[in-house]
Image 1 (tube, helix red, strand yellow):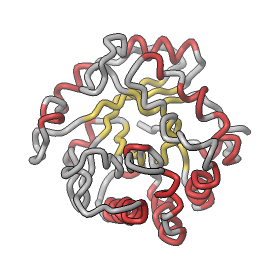
Image 2: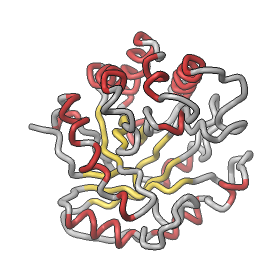
Image 3: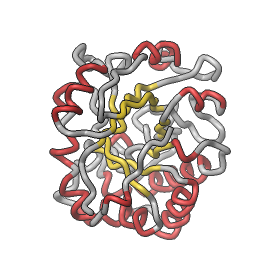
Length: 264
């Protein structure tokens, strides 16, 4: 059965500092989901726990109590509406929520490539696409050493342009070592984590399709399951999955049994 576009597990609301759209409420998101036949959606605002030191000013107001103001979530028959979050990962043991706080969420998205945050997520000394590829793979390997509830974790936007805004994302993807990718994706598959197909993370899809296909095809062959994400911060972006991911899913040849679902 073909991989259906009936979920969006990465949506931001007005509670994310980077969302300037007052219409991005849980009610708006639920209404969009019903109209477009979605079966599951997840609100995933940015978060930094008060129990974790090191938050920059941008994160300080986005604690768990703040993003929990979206609860209770809309209850609509036929639609599973989940409470999640998008964390931050700085390498090593540096996650923006504690291990115990994972229990507060249905789904936790972990990015390893918010490299636009220089001198915070991104260290100095990154000179080119090859260096960035090495750093991202190192972060993934480090992350996989942590004892976390992996079955409720998604790895965010692996081909997002936030990873390398001074050059081509495709060049970074090309520089990622296939053997290391197989190692990483095989472990993610064993742990039961999801791999995100993000509507905003395929901006060079038409011009450099092979670069994207190689990475996600390795994930598919390693047994990973994939979930769909608009990563919408504005109401107009809620349709990004239908607009940008249909051809991606078809090209990768994904079937419905390769879809990741949140289990609560």
